[in-house]
Amino acid sequence: MFLPSNTAKKKREEKERREAYARIEEYVLKCLPPSLRDCDGLEISVQEVQCGDPSCSPIDTAITIIFASGEGGMFGIPMEAKDVTEEDLLAYVPTEEVLEAWSRGESVPWPPEDDDSDGQEMAEFPPLRFTIGKRVLCRVGPDEWALGTIVLNWYREPQWPENSWAPYKIQLDDGRSIFAPGDMDQVIRAAPSDDESSPAVVDSE
Image (cartoon, rainbow, N blue to C red; front, side, top):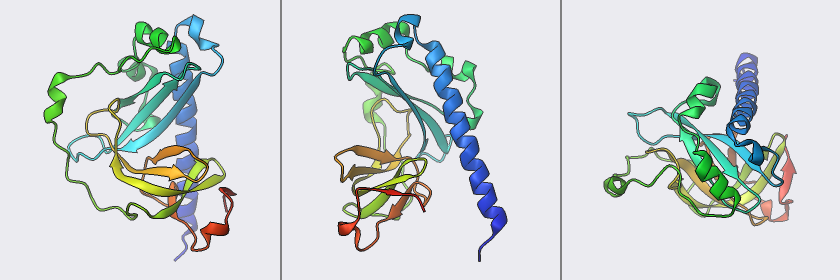
């Protein structure tokens, strides 16, 4: 049954999430050394990712910084984006030395690699809606969706917070490789059966 109140709530939550992402991007920019803030090609992006460990925060905020050199990294904060403050960010943002190294094209890990992390066991994950090889539509912008194929379930990158996982890694038809931060229709949907004739990027309904 269609419930207008639920739709309004989802729209409000999505609006709050986007506002939180924009606020965090401003925090990150303020943390950069002045010489790096106006660099051409600087990209800062914010996403929420699901944590696979039931003992940790269910949603982490993942922040990616990429310089024109192609180098950069991702770090995470164990809380939802709407709850992140500037003080929280300062506790996790890379050091000036690391940021400057990235801007020069040097590959420097962040957070620093932990020799004891090799023994970390993967948590038992809940089942997902889509299996590897499934054709899907992925949200790639406020009003845009792109076709792609699931290439990995429960994906993570070394720079992410401990026990933080994205449910899907997707290879898009346009050549990009992305991950879906949540297993929900607002983020990822089954592709229509006739997707072979669909454009690579489609407008939101």
